[in-house]
Image (tube, rainbow, N blue to C red; front, top):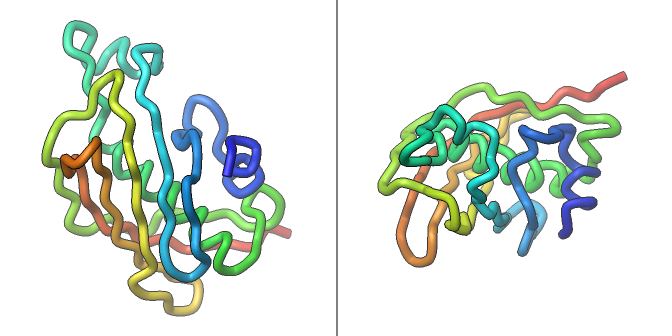
Length: 145
């Protein structure tokens, strides 16, 4: 899925649309997405100018955005049109290595549990073979009228 497909499913826009490409999505099962980190990311002006590090909270947001795509494909809704996904919680977030300009993040998320409108999705991020981040995101979806 290219950036246009991502934009159809997520309401996020620059600078907060973090995913560049979706490699694979299997409704109800799993998603694999890509984020290419460049030195031009706006937050590197302050995080940290002499040693730019991709913020950990944005790593978790990458997992949340990938999980929202998976949820959207699972229920067959286009978030930017009629459904909004809202973060409800973050569990067991762990950061194993820094992510820096030049890294390509490979983001994987699965659906662990769904109860009504509440979703629980564990996810991980790798750079090459190295585990960079893992977290479980909880979110809900709201149908817009």
